[in-house]
Amino acid sequence: MELDPFQKDALAEFGNIGAAHAATSLSQMLMSPIEMTVPEVQAVDIANLHNYINNEITAMVVFQIQGEVADGGYVVVSMPRETVIQLTNQMLGTTDADRDINEMDQSAAIEIGNIMISAFLDATAELLGIVMLPSPPALAIDMAHAAFESIVAQVAGDVNDVLIFNTELTSEAPPVYGSIYMLPNAELTQQLFLMLERMMEPLS
View 1 (cartoon, one colour):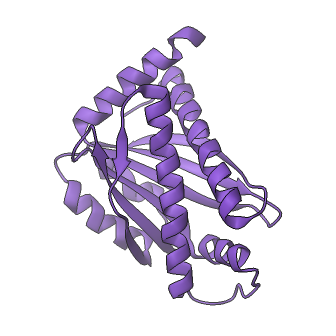
View 2 (tube, rainbow, N blue to C red):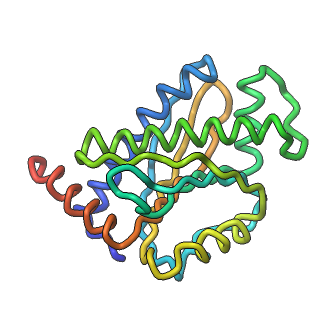
């Protein structure tokens, strides 16, 4: 899918509203001021997704999209190892950054994934009038390519395009990065773009 400038603006607006929701909740959890933005949005063909994923060790928190759109596809929060460890350290007030992901990091990744995805899906209800709810999360700690291969295998035939929201999260600590991948089925993709167009009409 090629996004025209109008669609890109609409998705960026949607992403930044979701990010603002997420920042508020993360600030409360981490007990420090957090800002979160979506500086870049991309729409890519699912067959080319591997070109946008590196091979570093990553924590992926995977949710199925439910609500008004039963079996609407999947949404995934992807965080590099360094991001997960830094956020866990912020939560616990610890400083050990040179370690593998442990059980505490896994719990933190699920909690952060829950907050980010709930915020993004709340933004869709607020902006677009469509209620999307996340399923209970599944966590994968793996090289990013390997984790995505199993997700793509599950949605083969139902999902054509992937929306990638690259996020930047800043606080008192150095900025951390992650991505939210939305893999909506064809019907939901059409609904989302129709509603995004309507949302941007007053601005055009």
